[in-house]
Structure formats: structure tokens, C-alpha cells
Image (cartoon, rainbow, N blue to C red; front, top):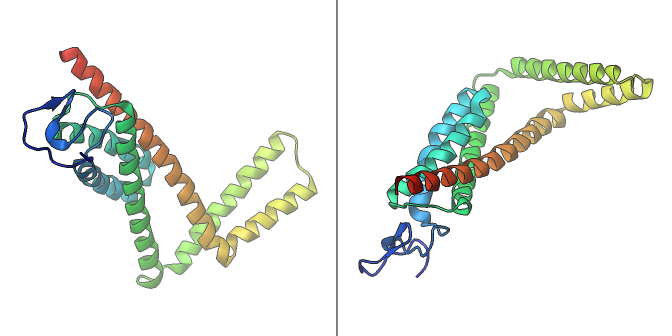
Length: 205
């Protein structure tokens, strides 16, 4: 019997999971209810992360935790392995990041081509680059590195980031690095959620 397939109607219960979901162990996943739970929690997490970027980590991690718990309630599972929780958390994090990317892209496109805020966006990016370069200079100065060659390399990096390709490429690179971090954290949050779910169920019994 494949994962997510309905059972034959017999009243047989596997350890921790109803047989109607076709699951033979707590490490198996019924992907239909798992995806429903992941999508349901990824949508508000992505919306909140797009509006309040400073709480993206909390939103995506919380969505992964709740997705695992919602999935467990939907299939009436008394226990879920940490591996299954990690996979559900991973899927939730990936879905949330795809939605964040889509919302962010729509925001950038509308700001440039609908509301014509090009000058403001370019000024904000220039300010960000200058602040980053200043932080780098202060760091190298504190560790005793203040050569002319280093200053020249930092200036080349600044000009690269302010070029047309840099304005498009560097923000996208920063986003993917952040997305990778969020996905890894979602995986960990899902595994921890499954672990605590199993522990709490064991204490009740």
C-alpha cells in the first residue's frame, strides 16, 4: 500500500497512526494531509514575513511547528518520528520561501514599473551598500588591516554592487542565502516539534 492511499476499511490500527492513511510506522507520511497543513500555515507565514521582514525566522519556524501538529491531529497520530517532522517542516519552509519570493518580486516590480519609485529604490540600495562598505572598513581597521590595496578592492566591490547587474544580482543572492537559512531552520523546527509531540503523548499515556 502506497503512502497516502486509503485502506481497505478494516479496523486495523498501526502504532500511532490510523490504518486508513496507509501508514505502517510513525516515520511514514501521508502527504495529502501533510501538504494541506504545510500550505495552510505557509500562506500566513509568507504574508507576515513579507510585511515584517524582521520576524521572518519566527514566522517560518512557527509555521513548521504548527504544520507538524496540525498534520498529527488530522491523521490522529499519537506519535511522529523526528524524521517525518523534519520533512514536513522542510516542505513548509520551502513553500513559505517560494511565496515570499513571489510577493517580494511583485512588490519590486510594482514599485519600479507601476508606482515609478526607481529613484527612491536606487537611493535605498546605495545607502545600504555604503553602510556595508563602512562596516567592512571599520572591521579591517580594528584588526590592523588598512592597506591601500584593500581599500581599492572594497571600492571595486562597491562599484560592482552599484552597477546594473549588481543591483539585480546581489539582492537576489542575499535572498537565496536567507531562504536557505530559513529552510534549514524550518527543518530543525519540524523535527523538534515532532519530538515534543511524541514526548507529550508518551507522558499522557
